[in-house]
Structure formats: C-alpha cells, structure tokens
Length: 187
Image (cartoon, rainbow, N blue to C red; front, side, top):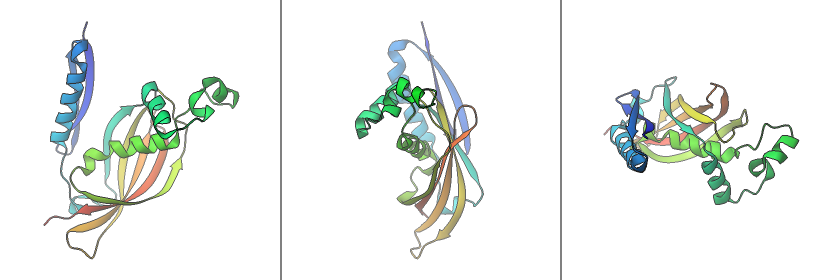
C-alpha cells in the first residue's frame, strides 16, 4: 500500500504542486521534506517588491477534525457550537463550526511563505469579517492583496497594508481582514 502526499512549494513567483508516493511509515518523513522544500524555495521579498493591487495566492490547508479539536482544547473553547454537532444542528447549522480565531490563525500561517524573511513586525489587524461558516473538513486558501504601502521615517523599512482573502474549497470567500505589516526595504 502506498500513500500519496501532496505539497505546494514556491518556485520564484509560481506555486508548484508536487505529488509524492510513499509507504505509510514514510509519511512523516515526506511531510518534513515538504516543509524543508517549501522553506528553501520561499522567495525573499522586500518592501519595493510589493505593488499596490498585486495579489498573491498561498498554499491550501485542510482543517482536519484533529486540528479543530486541538485548537479548541489549546485556547479553552468549550462552546457547544464548536464541539457538539447536535447542538449546532439544533441552531440551524449543518454541524459544528470552527472558531473564528482558528480561521484567522490558519490564514496568517498560510501567508508565511510570501513574507518569509522580510517581516519586522505585525503592526495591526483591521476590518476582520467572517463571511461564512468554516467547518472541520473544509480546505482553505488565502489570497493576499496589497492595499497600500508607504515608506517610514526609517530608511530600512516600510509599511504595507495587505488584505487577506480566505476562500473555501468551493471558491467562496469565508473571511477577510487587513493587516498592517512593517517589512524590510532593500539596503
């Protein structure tokens, strides 16, 4: 029996899909290689590389039942809408839903490849809107739109406002927010 692992990596400005076949006992090894490949291929961008209006797609991320349950335990969410399918159905939902902060956290993690090596600090998050329910089993992707940018008084950095658009596997936008990020400028 073989296991198929699918990973996405950046090559220049393109996102490449890789499919690897392996034995089940090698799955952890393949995933760790995938992470190393993704990290080594992540482009280094600077303030000057981000053009207003440009959009950057990220890798996708499946939200598993285990992810959902671990997140709820980690942050102490004991909300029935997140934990009990029956309770959620009684309130008109198709089943339990993911906490909004799980969606926001996964989206932020997905943008990591785009910002590898250039972020100095996250300055703020504004205009967060949760547009549709996300459920365990959904696959998310984030598309980053550069909304504005301006140099700062320090010559080694600039401020970029980026809007994260998060979509589910059906192409429906489920969440968006604006992040103000301090990034490095070219020396």
